Length: 435
Image (cartoon, rainbow, N blue to C red; front, side, top):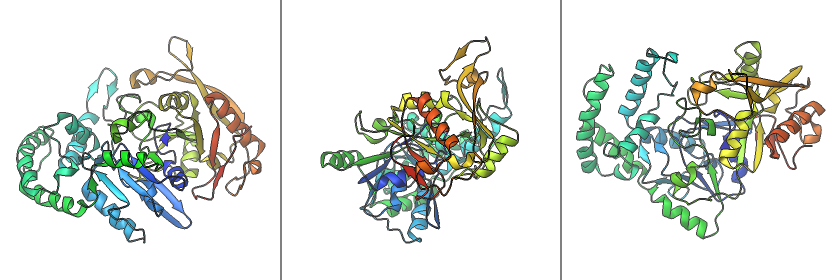
C-alpha cells in the first residue's frame, strides 16, 4: 500500500480497511514526519510512527529497520493509544533493533539548516529550504550513512555503551550546531545517555530482530501488509529531488527497509487523491493558488496531520500518478476524497506537459529544476453538483463522477478498486472497477 502523489493521500484509511485481511502490518520507511489519520465512528486517530494496523485487534505491527524512530515520540504515541483502550504489548508491536534513532540534536540541526537555507541564493533563485517538518528525519538518515555517528534502537538499553558513543557524537554535533548559528550550551552526553537508555528500557520488550521475525511470519504462511509512509513523489531517488524526504518511500524501499527480498508483494495498491496536494517547497505543476485551490483546501480539510500546515492544492496531475504507479508496480488504485470535488461545475485533469521548447510529453520529470518549467496541458470534464458522501454503492454516484473515475482508469491503465467518499471506514465504495 503506497502513496502515488506527494503524500497525504489517505493511506491510513486504506491500511485500516485492508488490515482485516492481513496478519502482519509493516512500516518500512520514514519517521515521525509521516502522519496517518484514521476515523473509526466518532473516534479520530492521528498516527505518526505506529502502523495503522495497531487499531485492529489480533494483528502484529512491525516498525522495520528502514524507519528512523524518535523514542520519545513513540512512547508518547503508545501511551496516547493505550489511554483510548487499545492494547499495545510485546506481542503486537515489534521494533527493529536496526532502526536508527532520532536524537534531539537531529531536530536542532534540521531546524537550523532550514533557517540557513531559507536565506541562501543560487542560480535557481532565493530560498533553498526544503520545507521539512523539522522532526530531525533528514539528519538522522544522514547519520545512518555516516555510520560512526549513528545510534540504533538495539543500542539504547545499554547505558554505558550509549554514554561512550555519545561522548564522541556530542562533541562533533556541538561544533556543527555552533557553525549553523545555534546558540545553546554544549550537548551533554551523560544527560542524553541517561534519558535515552531509559527510553530503551521502556521499549526493550518490543525491540527485536524484525528481519528474522518477518521471514518467520512469511514462512509460516502469515499474510503481510506493507504500509508506506510519505509517497512516491517524495522518494529520495525517484521523487522531485531535492524537494523529497530522506528515505525510499516508494515500494522500492520495502526490501531494504524490511530485509525481505523482492518481490515482496503480490499486490500493490496505489493510493491517490481525486486531486493533488503537496506540503512544503518544490514544484507543483497543477497547483492553483486562487479560489479553486482554496476551495479544495477547505472542503478537503487539507492541513497537515503532523504539522498542521496548510497544504498546497490543485487539480489532478495524472502524469505524476502514472509515473508513480509505474515505479511502484501498482496493480490497482484507491481513489480518495472524491467527495471533495462535489459542487464544481467542471474539473480539470492534467495528462501531459508542455515544456519550454514547445514539446509535449506525457512523461514525468523527477527533477525539481526542470519540472518547475513544465506547463500542464488540461482536459476539462463536467463536474457534479450533489454531495456524494452518503453513497453506499458506485451506482449511487452521479454519472459525471463515474465518468471522472473512468477517465482516470483509462489514463493510468489500472483499475480503481476503492473509492473514498468520506473519512469514515463506512464511506468507502469497494468492488469492481468503474466503467
